[in-house]
Length: 192
Image (cartoon, rainbow, N blue to C red):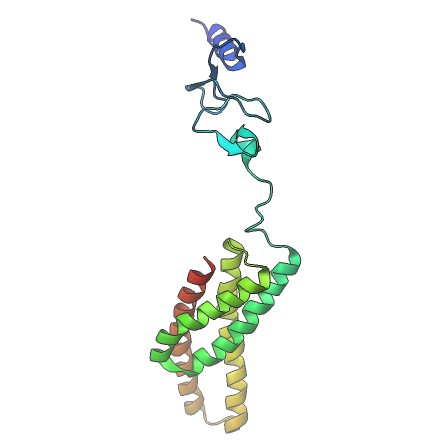
């Protein structure tokens, strides 16, 4: 059999005759089918078919153009970012001060509250954008909360000596890292 004859036979099989002869799936040429997409009329096998509002659809026609659960409008994105950073700042300020053990215990609770605040601000959206928002809220909150606490430390001790400042920075850094990990666990489990 020549290449032209084989191509002609495959084209005849995929075109179908509509008189009970099987068609060939447009994505899987080795699978015969009697079903076609309800929108574009391409032949589809059972592996490619998905249920649409009025029948079977191919993967291209059946996929929604916009997933309402995961897509954020610009207003929702900004509201979520503000809520995540605001709640993250309060949580970060607390998380830096509570120390290693309490950060490990209370961090997931604070992270869950940050996730809940972000969910409420965005209208209970889900997906990767929400995970990014709460992660940025936790990390950004620790940075802002740390800057506030540093400013309060400098104001309270009038600059202090270098050794006291160095000890404060090391303590805040170790507690912050534990808090960030624990709060991320709580926030991601709440948003996911």
